[in-house]
Amino acid sequence: AKKNPKVVGITAAMPSGTGLDQLSKACPDRFFDVGIAEEHAVLMAAGMAAKGMHPVCAIYSTFLQRAYDQIIHDVCLQNLPVTFCLDRAGLSPNDGPTHHGLFDLSYLRCVPNSIIMQPSNTAELGPMLEFAIQQNSPTFLRYPRGASEQTKSWENSQAIELGQAELLVDGEQISIWALGEFVSLAESVSEQIEKSYGLKISVVNARFVKPLDKSLIIKHAQTHHKIITLEDNVVAGGFGSAVLEIINQEGLPTQVIRLGWPDEYIPHGSTTSSLRKSYLLDKSSIYDEVVSHLDIESLNKNLAPLDIA
Image (tube, rainbow, N blue to C red; front, side, top):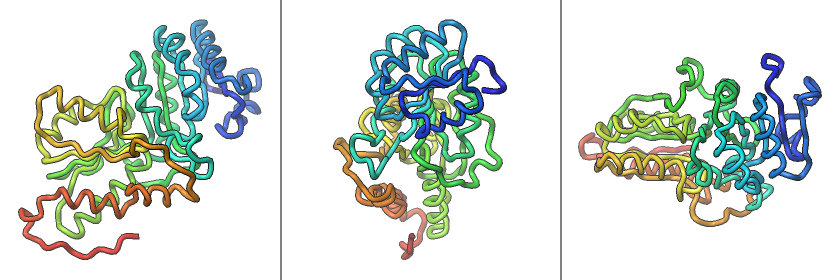
């Protein structure tokens, strides 16, 4: 905000939860809290964008559902430069089913003019936000509650470009396309498989859900037996579905295994890790799932016992 005078921050009674309270101290004249009125927050953002500002509208994923009509008709239809920061995208364990942000990918990717992305960790969030503010179209940046695990994947990563994924491991047989916090988990699973079987499988930090990296998806569909997608969203209509649509449109026979949340409301949980374990989205369960799709016979190795924390 200090670098760009056009940037303003808007929230709906969530200044501390979204971190915009820091903006209110640094630039009080460019911070707006509209109260518990998500629809008004989005409308206000649309009006400001139409007059040359670049609003950053920070709202919890689950609460942004209330402003779906305003997103479609007042922001996206007008193709206005508004950046939406979707906090609590994914699980919010102690708050339960009313606060789990597990639907936004499904209800947003069908809206024209939208750009949707998710950082793999905290270090990637800043560059993605800067990228979003440079766009002239509605941009949705989703991220989970709290700080994500820092991984080595960001240390020598490529610059963020529209619709371009980041290839972290170039392997064979299976390609894991992961989103958000599942990227580090996918890297760990890949390392364990290489250790046990001597096989390196591919891992991709998808970064974008819309537009997808179509060329890399097609390449991996042509060079790998299967593609596995990992997302912190319901499987129905989400990131994995978008990947599957591209492969289907290209007439490719590659099987896509979509891993994410099922078609049900997820209950309260003491921790994110405990809920993921209950729904087989923890490291051990995903490792077993990936191994079940390997062509073990071609590796000429026996299944090695593995203790995964």
